[in-house]
Amino acid sequence: MSKTPILYSRARIPYGTWGSSYFPNWQSSPLAEVNIGQFAGEAMNRILGLRKVAKSELDYLIIGSTIPWHWKFWNAPMVAACLGQRVPGYHLEQACATGLQAVTAAAAQVETGSSDVVGVLTFDRTSDSPAGIFPERRSYRRTEVIADVWDNFGFDPSFGNSMIASAGNTARKYKIARQEVDELTALRYEQYFGAKRSGFLDRVLVPLDVLNLQGRSMGVVSEDVGVREISLATLRAMRELDTCVTSGTQTHAADGMACLLVTDEVKAKQLSARPEIEITLVGKREVRTLPAMMPEAPSLAVAKLLEQTGLKMSDMAVIKNHNPFAVNDAIFAKMLEFDWRKMNNTGSSLVWGHPQGPTLTRIIIEALEEAVDLGGGYVLVFGCAAGDVGIAAILKVAEGVK
Image 1 (cartoon, rainbow, N blue to C red):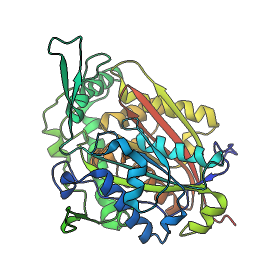
Image 2 (image 1 turned 45 degrees about the horizontal axis):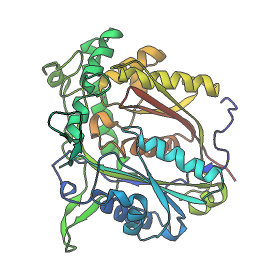
Image 3 (image 1 turned 45 degrees about the vertical axis):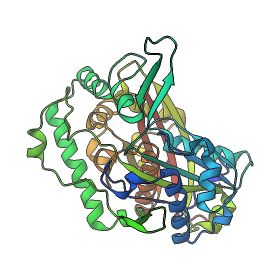
Image 4 (image 1 turned 90 degrees about the horizontal axis):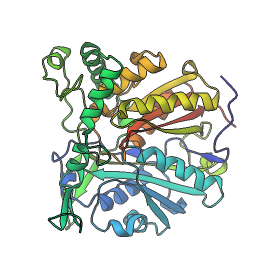
């Protein structure tokens, strides 16, 4: 492997201190009826307990979400109270890039010596998302009402197109064939269900009780509700909504949370389930592309990141991305001259859904677990975000560190 300098030489992610809820499809589980910030804090408390990490180890909390929730004004301190550890912190938001941005922000917090153990907690609830009423003097109605999830998904105020339109635009630009996109999607479903049957997902996803205000159980979230196996023949029969985009070749809105820790080398060894494993953040890059071309932005970010680090695609042991459209992967394969069959080996957000805030956090966790199974190596994670933005990061998993 190339001897690449580490972006954050002090920061480490302690192995096995992470966890994610399952991501049930919107309106399909008890998560649709809870304060997601409160649930996320309580869920992180549960996950830390399962991972045998005392919550008293935390001295800072970075949370990430994109959809307003009750008491969001109080952000991280409120969620920390639900976690049961009164620590400072703040809220971070960048659409679908939120999960990765929160991890790099935590690494910066450790790198500067400002904190020793930073909790990263990302979450979102697309179910019953609120509508906002905004005073607007320039409008003849004097007010504007926005349904937070659906209006933003369906309309980019910068140029007026929907996100689906950006997928169709980019598919036409790169001359992507519908047949390839359907075949790619079928493989992504096979990868997800293969990981589920093998027990891989049980190592990173945690069944969680959902309680009502009286503390009574409303049910257990113990699967990615709404995800079903799908055949290539079924995909081929679906109607195109835009070029290469059908209901089967795009993700779906979901609810969920995911968390991990970032700390220094000494603390990482103390907290890790396997102290001999060292996880570092090698580099990160963001790119903004032309309007309505969002699916090409992640590939541009990856290309810049490889140039920045001096690494090549062949150096990567694990490659995993947030792919709201299957078109994203086909474009990535074309731009980076890479076989899309060799990525997303344990599933991806195309299949298991998109709660936004925690999506890339879950991707990072799954990617790191896969790298450990392989004996270590470089891990490439990337994805797109609203505003035609692409984000990419390379992490390194090294085993046998003393």
